[in-house]
Image (cartoon, rainbow, N blue to C red; front, side, top):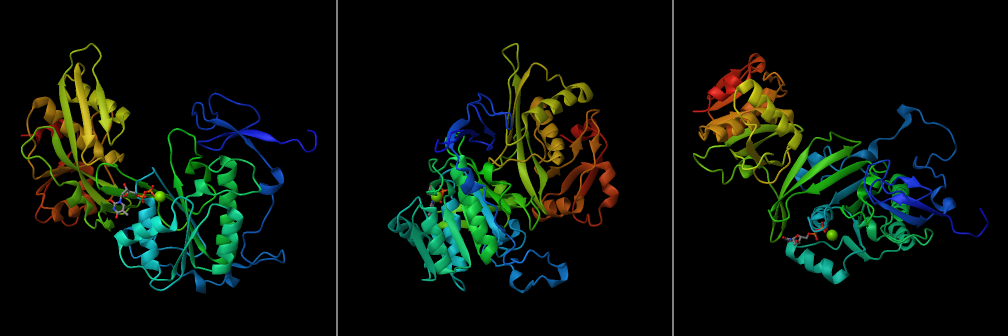
Length: 456
Ligand code: TYD
Ligand code: MG
């Protein structure tokens, strides 16, 4: 290629796949129409840098020589967030907080700033809001210490200078899509810009033991590079999700180099910012109807924590040749499979019925242990017979209609007991593993027929 000519490449804005020509569908993530042409400056992003944090003399280090004194985790003041992070913030880590615009990422991080600045310095860099706007938000949240420094800019080079000068223990960049490096020709928010900015922030984090939080918006349109492009570069990926119309929010760990990824944290958006929800089961079961058919409470494990949710099903006769089925909060294919099992093994003629399944509260739960709950809710609605309100169930359902074992049975039963349930339907094979069943009647079932018989 002639010298001086701009080199361009096409990038999938969803997964970052690079191609020399435009493609209609991305071979990487199968997204349609996601390729955008960007200028690439190979020598700016292709530079090899050290991430070892001071190991300059090209000598590998013995594991016993590594100094662990500075590696104590910082507490964020939010128990829910600390748990998702695996026990607090690891110094020198790079954490990506992704989520839909307006879900509350900036609010959460500003509240974290408030808690952290009680005994350390935090630098909050915003490319989205002005100083006055941040202050307005801060006033809703509460009192702030002056150890929080704010900086509103979008230039990556200027940000680096400020971070170097301030030497804060924690830096927050809100959001990565607004960051612009002069060394990359592409527009802010494009794959090359977002990647370059993240790579440079990674240098800062690893080189100076500063924890960097990056905010990334997820957009469906593919105009702005999704945080998925960055997932492999950062240490921890947290997604903040929830229904914008409902007030609760779920913080989910998607990747974590320093802890488990199954953990979730539950928050509620209030007038004065986010509030932790310490007992999510109670919260999720709020407003459960009394004596209605097609409703049952099931138990799902989210990491180490059991969460009780209400499963609702509505089965009615279909007016068209092709029955309509929808699933909200769970996998539609799974619902179709369970309906086929119910038809063949449970003897319910569902083939010309419409069916709607919903996990109440808008939460997403895909654990196989929810199967039995879905089956029970469908059967209850089909027969129009309500399930007793004191019953809770969990178990995986197989294709022969058998109810299979699930893990952490005791935790689930204990949670059910705590919330006042008195009957628990669970896989028969899991019953011997239970140690404490006082105050709750355990019904072990081998197959779905036995389970359906428990419906009134
Ligand atoms: P925000 O943190 O700006 O979202 P993001 O950074 O993810 O784009 O959240 C904005 C929403 O939160 C907005 O709809 C208003 C609401 N909100 C409250 O309900 N209470 C509050 O105290 C604050 C600060 C925001
Ligand atoms: Mg924001």
